[in-house]
Structure formats: structure tokens, C-alpha cells
Length: 253
Image 1 (cartoon, rainbow, N blue to C red):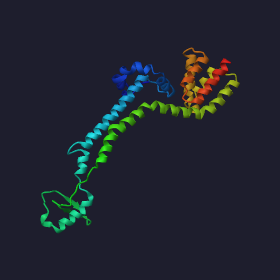
Image 2: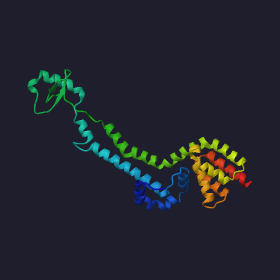
Image 3: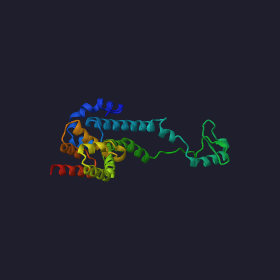
Image 4: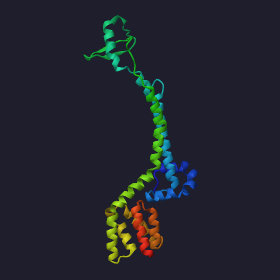
């Protein structure tokens, strides 16, 4: 499988540091096989970690843009007038016209649509970005979002395995009927799996598993039982695992 640019970049940065440990992780390799993610384990881990780091950097940028003094998002928000003080300031300016300071650029739109200046209004208040909101923003962008991103990227193989498992189980009854019909017609097992592999539009993801069995037999020279045992480890669904194991039991009995 051709690596994407991001996967190649991640592998260059982190791949060599986790190559040995990742390749010794049998569970990870089996999960990638079941999910039909055809990349090396260290590439998968490296790209997942780098994606998490990229997410964390984006979160830090968001926090900087929010908390930057004077021109940050929070500073701009807190420089805006509280809408609840507009009408009181307009009323104050009406009754205290001589006290309005024109050098202070405070103004608001009244009910009649006219803009009224009310510089130096004692009722004037700006918006307040609550401390709880700031805490939530820091915790969310600094901890929660990066943690969720890590879980999301590291569990992408598991989600794909579960998706494939659902698809395999959906087509399994039709595959079982087709296999029985082909066997009754005295078709050899390799021809049965070849036929399944050529009909992906009918049998979905199970056609890929069949193509791997046919490849192991014809290209790699394995016997049928060995190829089926490998298919058992690749199967993303326990029902498909039982299906292939039943074939192994029938052939070895």
C-alpha cells in the first residue's frame, strides 16, 4: 500500500524510534491485518502520534489567539460594551448632555435606530469572559481535545476492524450458500475462493479475505489448510473466524 505524504513524514520523524517495539507487538499487527490497513505497525503508530501532536499544536495556537493581550479573542470580547448598559447610557446622555465626553468614543444605537454618543457614562460596562469559561477553554484545548484526538487516531484500526466485521457478517450467509453450491458442483476450494474474490460487488469485504486465501495458495504455494489458518487470524468477525475454522476442521477430519 502506498503511504500518504503525512504517513511518510510521520515515519521519517518517529518511525525509527518505535520500529522494534511496534513490530514485536503481535496484537497490533493482527489488528492491522483484520482492519485491512496495509501499513507497517510503526507507520501506524507514528502517524497516529504525529496527528495527535498536530492537534495539540492547533489547540495551543487557539489558546494563544484567545488569550493574547490586547488583540486576542478574549481581549476583543471584553472590550465590547455589555448590551444591557446601552439603554441606561443613552438615557444618561439625554439627561446629562453637558457631561458627555466626546473624546471617549462610546456610543450605541437607540430604539429609534439613531446612534447616540455617551462618552464618560457611569453606567458603561464591558463584557466579561467568565473565569469558568477560561478554565474550560484551557482544559478543553490543553488536555481534553488532545486526549480525545489520541484516542481517535490510535483506535482508527479498531473502528475499521469493527466496520469490516459488520460488513463480513452481513454477507456471510450468502457466501456460505454460494460455497456449499460450488462444493456440490465439485469445484475445487481454490476455484471457490477465486470466484468469491472476483465478485466484490456481490460479497463485499469477504471477497478480500477470499482473495488473500487464493493468493496464499497460488502465489505463495501454501496448502489449503495453512492458508485457511492464516485467514482465521485475518478475519475481522468472530462468525467469519468460525466459518473458516469449520472449513479447517472439515479438511483435517
